[in-house]
Amino acid sequence: MVDITHKSTTLRTAIAQAVVKVSKIETIQAIENDTVPKGNVFAMSKAAGLLGVKRTPDILPDCHPLPIEFTGIEYVTNGLEITILFTVKTIYKTGVEVEAMHGASVVALNMYDMLKPIDKGIEIHAIKLLNKKGGKSDFTDKFRKDLRAAVVVCSDTISAGHKEDKAGKAIINKLEECDVKISEYVIIPDEVDAIQQKAKSYQKQGIDMVIYTGGTGLSGRDVTPEALLPLLERRIPGIEEAIRSYGQERMPFSMLSRSIAGTIGDTLVLALPGSTNGAKESMEAIFPAVLHVFRILKGARHD
Image 1 (tube, rainbow, N blue to C red):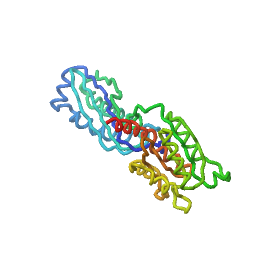
Image 2: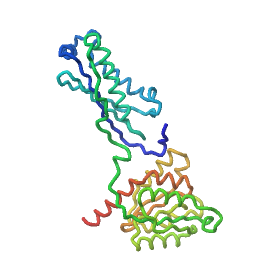
Image 3: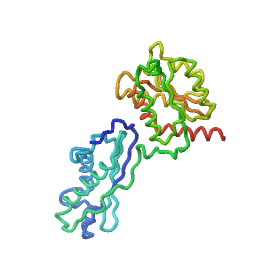
Image 4: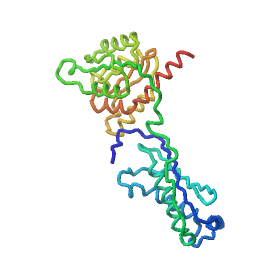
């Protein structure tokens, strides 16, 4: 199966259809009058669909097991055709399009099975996805393509040349994926003055984002939050919560990180963990959605 461990959980909805076409009006009348020998066609087919949608990953090998949190089944009769509308909802990391189409197919097949004794000309048509919502594509803003970022690595050992930086490079890779230009990439020691000077300088230059990595732990030299907090005009707790929540789902020590987020003027300032995985996962947790902040900041400045 495709790896979805990096994805964020969102509300996912899919609506699919299948069309059952009978060959004579008497079949429709038998369904509506509940005189089909095998029983109530709509009720039993709905039950089959409810069971079928839950078994999707058992039948289709590349589908992930996921919590089905709502299933809705509607029937629309038009002449000799009965359209099945099958809705599935979940709050999960991947969508439910296949589940909805599978469910609609099972409903149609059960109708076929129940009606074949009284109608030999039944056909199943147009199994397809009608609509889907949720996931990254639904929350993709028309982000600006002129955004610039500075990446600051805070580390005594790396600045002294005793260790190679990987966290900063992971941040840069994600920024480039999001079409954010890198204005500067710099490595500095864990010193309050140096950290503050960089934030002030980049803000004066009009850099859109300043992303620090390192110095968010609990050792005596971890001073990035202490350096930045006095400079921030506004904290953005939701970004901080998203980073820690995403990390905590992956390893238990993420709760010890003191990542922070806020703004200085129109500049977004982020302080992320210094470990490679911590920096990478933090970026996965909030990008590209966090870029929406620049639409809000721009609007706020013009109100």
